[in-house]
Image (cartoon, rainbow over all chains, first blue to last red; front, side):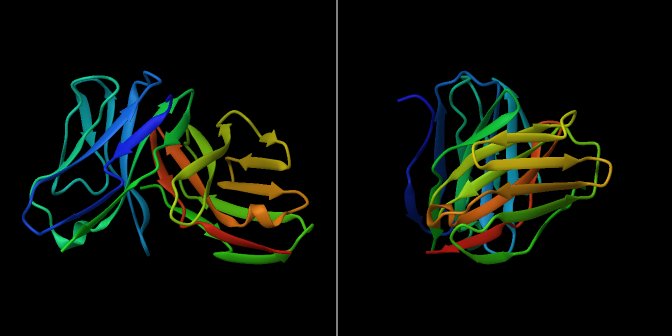
Amino acid sequence: DAGITQSPRYKITETGRQVTLMCHQTWSHSYMFWYRQDLGHGLRLIYYSAAADITDKGEVSDGYVVSRSKTENFPLTLESATRSQTSVYFCASSGGGTQYFGPGTRLLVL
Amino acid sequence: KQEVTQIPAALSVPEGENLVLNCSFTDSAIYNLQWFRQDPGKGLTSLLLIQSSQREQTSGRLNASLDKSSGRSTLYIAASQPGDSATYLCAVANDYKLSFGAGTTVTVRA
């Protein structure tokens, strides 16, 4: 299906484990983004990418790593998960100035 | 750093009443402004995009205005329906990065 998808939709992990959240878009948009949404903090930008192999940090990038070897994929990795990374993670891509969001991944770190 | 404020935080109206949602931002050097809708437990759906050179944008019952010089945008929803109940988020783009307000949660009573 066309659009932007995220996997997994739900994930439970333990502190210290590495976790990778996947994001895939079918529009060939150049720009892609990762946000986290937390009660009391709203949506905050973690990382963004202007094109394949071009990434840059957002507001809350500590503890996260991204890569973008292909235009359509933008995985987000938590190198060593912490409880403070329990959140809902949204991936987005931008076309014509509009950002389109995926359905989100709910991550619980125990 | 761009700060985005949405007032009120919550709003409850009877069906048929017009809705007025406010958004203010601190840095007027914006690229564009986007209004989103978010249903509980779901992702964000883009409603309207206003480019920095535009004063307003309309889609069906929705109309959004932008006053860049005063750092304000208003979303009007005409003749509200129970299906309009959701959280509405304002997001301001400086370059390609979005800064979000905390949202206005709308309840439309049947």
